Image (cartoon, rainbow over all chains, first blue to last red; front, side, top):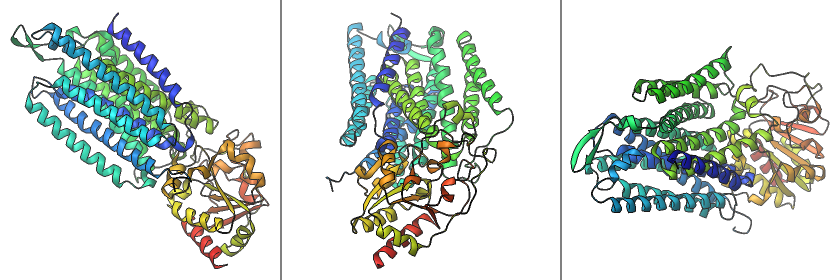
Length: 96
Length: 495
C-alpha cells in the first residue's frame, strides 16, 4: 500500500479515537485538558528536530528547523508545566 | 519518506531496516502513552498522573528522534541543544510565573507556538529537500530529492503551512484580546467584505497548494501561502468578541493539533500524525461543547460578530433596578440557609477568587450551605472559573455545572451573581427577539433572592440589558467584585 494511504488510515482512526476519549470530560477539567492536549501537540518537536538535522550545514531549511525547535520546546515544556501547576490545585474535600 | 530511504541505503540494508522498525515501534509507544494520558486527563482523580504519562510519551518520542538523527554532525546537535535550552527556559519560566487569571492568554500563546512550529517544520523540510546530501555507495553527493516528492507530501506541506500559520497569528490576536491590549480591542472588529476576503484568501491559499503540486520547485509559492496564512489568522479572530473566546481558544487548540498532523504527513512520521489527530479531535469536541453551551453554531460564533454595538434586537427590559447596601445584603445572607454563588468573567477581572472563598467560609461557619454554579462559557476559556476557584482551594465537589445546579435554584435562598451577566439573563428562555434566545442559562432568577455584584448598570457583553436586574427578587450591589465580597465577609463576621 502507498504510504499516503496508510497514513490517511492512521489519521482517520486517530481522530475517531480522540473523539472517543474526550467526549466524557467533566467541565471542571476543560482548561487543564486544553493546556495538556496543547502540550501534546508540541509533538511537532519531532519534526523540528528532524528538519534541524541535515548534513548540509547551514541551509535555510535547517535554520527554520532550529526556530521550530525553539517554539515546539516552548510549547511542550510550557504546556506540561502549566498543566501540572493547575492540576496540583484541583483538590477534593477528602484530600484536604 | 525519501530522505530517510536514502539514508537507509547506507552500509548494510538489514541493519538499517531494523533501526527503522525500532523507531516505528518507539513512536507507537509514545502515541499509546499520549492516548492513555489524555484518557486519564478526563477524570479529576487521575488527571495529574495522566499529564505525567503524556509527558513521558513526549520524552520517549524525543529520545527516539535523537536516536534517529544520531551519528550526525555534532555541530547540528550543539545548535539543536541550544534551541531546546532556549525553548525550555522560556517555557518553564512563563509556565511557573503566569498567574491563574492569566491562563487564557497562556493557553493562546502555547497554541500559537505549536502552530508556528508546524509551519516552520513543513517549510524547513521542504527547503531541505532541495539539496539533501547523501552517501550513495560511499560517495557523498548533493541530491535534489524534491523531484521525487509525491503530490501527497506537497499537499501536506501546503496544508501544514496554511493551518500552522493561521493558528499562529490567530492565537496572537486572541492573546492580545485576552490581555486587554490597547491595539486590538476586546470587541469584534468587522468591516464590509470581511467574510468575502477570508473566503478569497482561503481558496487562494488552497489553490496555491495545488500550484505547488504541479510545480514542486516553486518555493516562492510556499512563501506566499505562509503570508496568506498569517493574514488569514488575524482576519479570522479579530472579528470575534471577547466573550466568544472560549470557542476560539478551543478551536485554535484543535488547529494546532491538525497542523502537527499535517507536518506528520510531510515527514511520513506516524507519531506526529496520530498525536496531532488526537489533539485535533479533542479540540473539536471542546469547541462543540462550547458552541452548544451558547446555543450557537460554529459559523455564527466565527462570523456573527456578537458583542459589538451592532448586536441588539428586542426591546430592553423596563423598570428600575434596586440597589442594596452591604449591610442590607449581609442581613439577608445571614438569614439564608443555602447560597449559590454564580461566578463570571467579572470575578476573574477583579481577581476575586480568594475573597470569594473567604466569603464562602464565612457563610459555612454559620452553617449556611454554599455551592457554586459554573456555566460552561463563563469566563474567557473553557473551564476558566474552575481553575480560578481551584486556585482558591474551593473543593471541586462544590462546583456544579448547568444541568446539576439548575433544579437547585428553586430551593436556594440566595443566588449571588459575581460578575456574570449574559449567562444569567432570563430573556434567553422566552424572548425570541433577544440575540441570546435559546442559550442555556443558569436559572438564578428562581432563587428566593438574587444579588448581583456589578460595577455599574452597563449592559453585558452581548450588548443587551439583563432583565434579571429589574426583577422583584433581585438586588444590585454596585462595586468592584473583590471589594464587595470582602466587605460582605467583614460585615457578616461583625454580626
